[in-house]
Image 1 (spheres, rainbow, N blue to C red):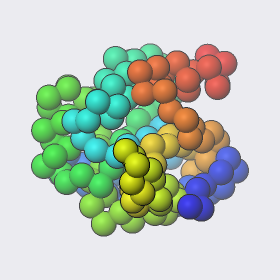
Image 2: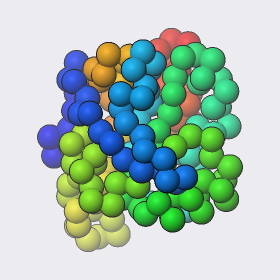
Image 3: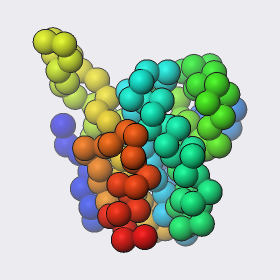
Image 4: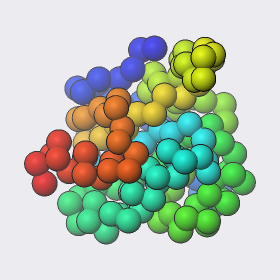
Length: 154
């Protein structure tokens, strides 16, 4: 894997969210953007992470952050996931894995004794100019907001 690092220019991405809207990196110009990548809708860790960000959404917005989730699930899957857990932020359906690969988080994983290619759980914070500020490669799904705020000393 060739994962993006702080200081790298984030790839300009375009994707479709759970409501069928087009979402681009450039839509968030001037704001800090949390782009969190997760393996699969409706799984325990991914649900915990999404709900932690949801529960702290207002606080994160007050601190100047916007949020976008990305996985390889379909728009339909994202729609059900977002509705079930009342998620207030866009979830991009990257079924072709173009955004996932551009950020460098597709690669070998081990789970229950087997190795396979998949999405690694990462979060990138991108500044208002499209530059990666922070990279979280060890995401605490239940306390992710706290992880982010601690790094920013907020």
